[in-house]
Length: 372
Ligand code: PHE
Image 1 (tube, rainbow, N blue to C red):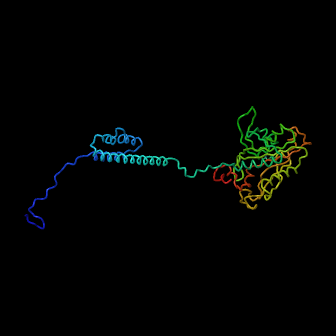
Image 2: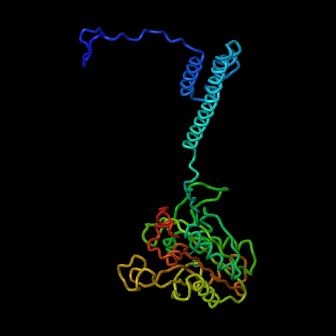
Image 3: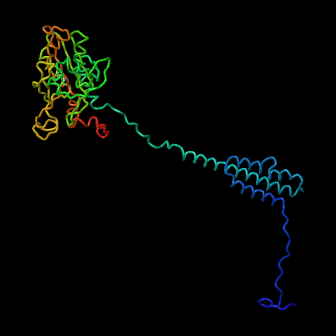
């Protein structure tokens, strides 16, 4: 009987490890290994093509798992059931994993596609609407007011002959009246006619129209004019004018005054005061000018850049058509009389829009232009 020691006998040899029995790799282990390997490969499949290759290699007709299922018939009945169950479970699990991987890849692709595309939820960029320049608008308004009174709108050339711009308006060469219009001259001849210039006013159209028409005449002539001018708050070297001409039997100064007064009322409203005072232009007799009360100062500020303390701003010249001009056109000046006027469009746009410097109109500064 061996002795009993509470701590065990120091003399006893250490207990032997159990004998090593090498584990047999069974068909069930093989299934597990195939599944493990397949799952790992599936994680590395990055696109649809890789997924399809994976499916063929694992679940396809000659796939690894399919091979095991095919081989079941050759196993003993006991093992066949066990392996068959394991293989079928592995097949279902791998099919589900494939589907999950497919869904994940598709979702990622969709996400990537929308990330680089246009964000349709952003508000659109507004398209700025253009609008007409305040001078163009004023020009159209002036023309329309006179059209409503029965005047017909016509246009004439901007490059004009000296003959129409000056001579036939009774402004001969060396006449001091030419000093009123410093001029841009053009060196070329056109149709052998010379000298040419950029018209300084729209009045040449009076002559051109009378030359080709018989009274009664009522025309309104909008257009650009050019003057060799030192620019300041009320003078530009390019300006727009509207010319007015009426020739008929029995026209008098009262018709001129009434027409211009009605124009001013429609253009500026009843609150703006207008004044007519006498003036001189070689092609009218008598000549007048029409002024509106100053819109930039109370009317007595000597430093005012618009009226210089005069209180009035000239917006047009006018008068009764000179009889010599009617005669030159072939009209009987005993029978016919006429009135004419020529107005500066910018000078009219200025009080209308409260613009105190004419030069702002053509500087094309959008900060200025967007206000209208
Ligand atoms: N043509 C003149 C100017 O430019 C204005 C005017 C026109 C005066 C018609 C009288 C009659 O100043």
